[in-house]
Image (tube, rainbow, N blue to C red):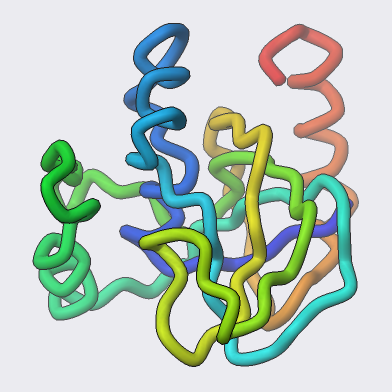
Length: 156
């Protein structure tokens, strides 16, 4: 299965493992879950993709993400403490259903000048350690086996 590495805290803002059930549905409706992954390049890929939390995250990135925690006039989003964000592994799964042109911004999560990969049907997954890569990448066979076992056990 394909995966996409995303630096934290942005990966966490997409997956939001702290929300479930009606709280998750309300957050989706309120635009509190990050529904756009911004990239400098477009993609024709559509379908399910694993969300990989990159290993690297600087304090500056963490602090910058807290500044605009969004939307204007909307609820404040509290990030987990810096040292509690899981990194270097699979943390969720989503569907990419379109790639939005930089001039067609439809979400407050879509940054100026970036292509926006629109994410739907996002689900958090139990953390599975995995080395990331640039662009879309295939997860190694041992990670695929762990994910398949979780699916068979009903964890996914």
